[in-house]
Length: 387
Image 1 (tube, helix red, strand yellow):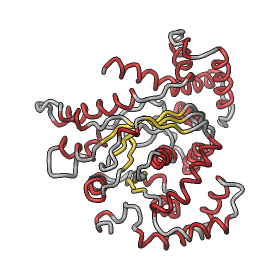
Image 2 (cartoon, one colour):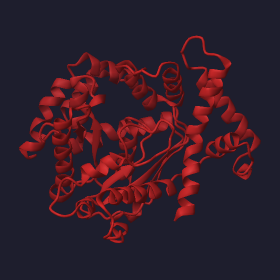
Image 3 (tube, helix red, strand yellow):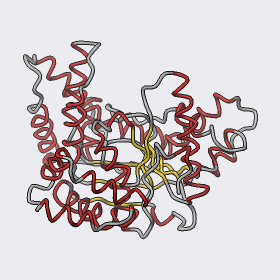
Image 4 (cartoon, rainbow, N blue to C red):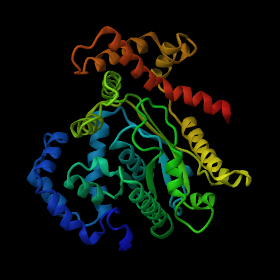
């Protein structure tokens, strides 16, 4: 049973599981979502299958695994895993990754863990995405825990302590791995950098120093590489909207569209690369560092591991060379690759629905999209040089 202080953010215990399943299948929004992502579903039969599931782990194997395998088949050219053989079956870890897709980053990681013979991880998800109560119920029966966001200062500190405590509880007491992104929200330009505020939050729980508290979480940086980002044109449109209006804010509809597009859009090849646990590197930090410098150094360690773990595709090299006006990496792609990628970029930009886009604005969006594909290579080069 989850301790009382974590019950409002933790995944549902088995005692609540059947009740929440029964509530979810009655929700019109849930039925709409299921029919949207699985057009051929026999919904009444699907509901009976859900009601027959009795526990979260069974839900992941009997419901989520077939669903994710269907998504892999329909929306990718394969999901590949590297470095999973270095994981220890007897040690729970905190997978900290760059963030590309709102829904699928952690889901595909769990798919890789299942395929490699490991238990799935619990997933951190921001409450800003839990637009409807049934979405919160759904993610919490699927081994997700809630990150409370957009709170006033006092409440934010309380929430940070609660979240930190829960993640330590997962590792130390439940012996269950967790997943959390290296930053709040996705890096829209794909410049993946760890937020030091996240590390400060993780250090709040434990009985030792900041470094010792972070060490106890066994942070294992993991790199996610999507060949194509189905949401790239939505991010470009957001850049243009903010350029036109600095006060522009996305709507709930925009968030739902991003989730739907990320789930169902074509992603090409997807790679997960598990890096080394950072504990050995933490042991080598200078004892003379002040608190702020400690978090800066830990963030740099995580960033370097993630950046070195990228799987780089021809489109990354093409975008880099285009923006740098060079042919430095011309041996990494063919003329046909260039034509295909140009066709892809033009097709994505054609999906933008903002009215009265000028040629200059279209070129601006094109450069933003190309920057998204070039940044992983920029960061990979810098990480290798710094190692």
